[in-house]
Image (cartoon, rainbow, N blue to C red; front, side, top):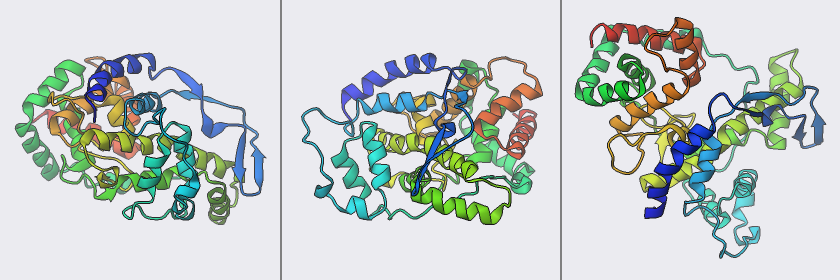
Length: 349
């Protein structure tokens, strides 16, 4: 990573986060008036809707402009003939989408055809996902709170600093880290770029076709339109994080193929998606990089995320607290577990 890359971005990030506040709106591509299948373009009945704007994509592209993976003006045009394997291993759709955003095609082709990168397989998704309520039932236990408090004892200074700077209670920060990864014990072993690339490929026409058929076998009342919307939601959600994975790995000075995390592509103590590391991450230990696997950086990053998402008052209603935690994870059982554990931890901190 160049010194220019390291020095420019700490100045650039606050400006972009401020410019793209969570309350801004944009036209959501997942709800656009058309979708594509192998049989052609289909019309959607719903008009373009608006949704909260997130700074992830803008900040990711800002990082790209200072990255070695950004296209250099002196580079020769890339021809698919130079690397036909990109067309045969299933990643051509993803390749084209990332090149459109400014990723160097030669470096990207080398990444996607690396032997460590599995071939793309069809993703089968549930167009009406629902998380089981019992999934967090064994999380808020005395044993887990004891483990969290031991982690707090090791990093009390970082928790206190984060609370003072961002105004988020340290009990809430500790609870999230415990629920997410057992305070760093379980950060995941999946190859992140593959998992995210897999999810980001949901809107390929042939994938939409297969998932229309798949979901129609599950639900009698589902329409192709509903399945297509879900496919585009998955692509729009995860495509920026594929690019961000490359940039986070570059900042960590490792290959993107060596970055490991959860099966959904989240990394580090707080299980941030890579784009969220770029958008909300904090270099708390002042080593000139944001590291999701550093306890200090993770504690401050979670606090920064929650502050930006609305945790900005010393006293907040339960509804307000739930709304902010929902920005981290929209699952009602997750929100209840985090807040209940935070209450328990606060009594012992």
